[in-house]
Length: 454
Image (spheres, rainbow, N blue to C red):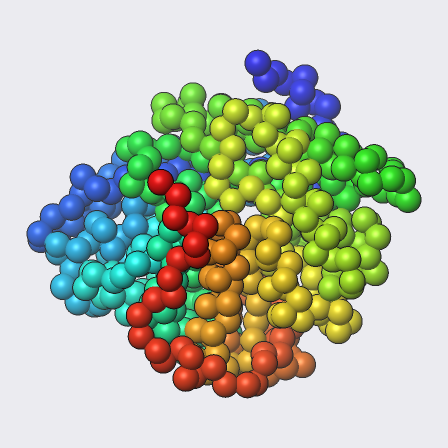
C-alpha cells in the first residue's frame, strides 16, 4: 500500500530536482458515439467527452494541492477518429468538423491537449483513413488543443509506404498551414511504428480499441532527479551507476502510482497504466542529455552515447516495474531536441546530428522527436526519414516515432521558439541526397521474418 510517507521521502526531488507527474490522461472510448449523421456524431462526441472529463482538471489540481506533487498536464485521449467517423465523414472537410468538436470539448473541460485524431494504417488505408490523413493540415491549423498521430508500420504488418509517402506530404502541408506560427502544427503531429494503445503522452496518445470505456493513465517524469542521484556516485562502477538509476526510478514511479490511484478513486474511472518515460523540459536541470553527460559524455552524440542511453533506458524500466504492477505506454527515455536544453546545446556544439539521433532511437523511447528542419525540405525527404525510423521500430519490435517540424522560411543556423513545454530548437541540417525514386514506389515493405510468430 502506498502512503504519504513514501511521498514525503521525495520532497527534495519535487522542490529541488524538477520531479513532477507530467500528465494525467483520461482515455475515452468514442465507439458508442458512431452515427451516419455528421451533426449527430459531433454532438455525441462532445457530450461524452464533456460528461466523463468534467472533473478531470479539478481533481488533478486537488491532488496537486493535497500531496504537494506538481501535475503539469491534464489531458484526454480518444478512440482513433478514423474508426469513429467513417460512417458520417465522407470528405476531409467532414473530419475537420470532428477535430473542431474535439477542440471545443477539450476547451470546455480545461485540458491542455486532446489526442486521438488518428488512423491506424500499418497494412492499408480505408477511404476513411485517407480522408482523415488528408484533413490533418486544416484540422491542426484550425484547432488549438488537438493532437494527431498516424500509425504507418508495425512488426507484424511491415511498413505501409503509401501511407509514409502521404504523411511526408501532410507534414509539409501542415507546416505551410501553420507557417505564421513557425509551423507549430507539426509539433502536434507524430508518425508511429508499433504505436501503443495506452500512451498518455502527446502528441501520440490515443485510446485503443481494446481498452475499457474510460481509463486513467499517468505519465511520470524526473530527469533532474536521476541526474542529481548520479552526481553522488560520479566516477563509480557501472554496477553502482545502474543500481542508483534503478532505485531512483522506483521512487519516481511510486509517486506516479499514488497520483494514479488517487485520480482513479476520485473520478470513479479505472486505473490503466503508469508510463515510466523520462520526459525532459526546457528547464535547466530537467534534461535527459544532462544525465548522459553525468554518465560520462562531453555531449550527447559523443562516442558511447548509444550505449549510455541503452543503460539508462533499461535501468529506468527495471526500477519502474518494481514500483507498479501496471506499466505501459512508452516507458523509456525521451530524446526530443526542442524540449531538452542539453540536447539543444549538443546540436549547437556540433556533437549531435539527425543521423546520430536516429541511432539513439534504437535503444530508447521514442524516436526522432521535436526536431526542427529547414522549411525547404521536400516531402519526399521527410517521407524517407519517416521510413528509416519505421524500419528501426519494425525490426527491433519496439515503438518508434517521428515528429519533424519543417519550419517554413527558416534554414540551418536559425532558431525557432515554440514556447512552454515545447521549448525552442535550432534548425538542424538534413541530408540533401534524394530518395524520391524510393519513396514513390507503391505498396508496403514486408514485415521481417521474426514477425512470423503464431
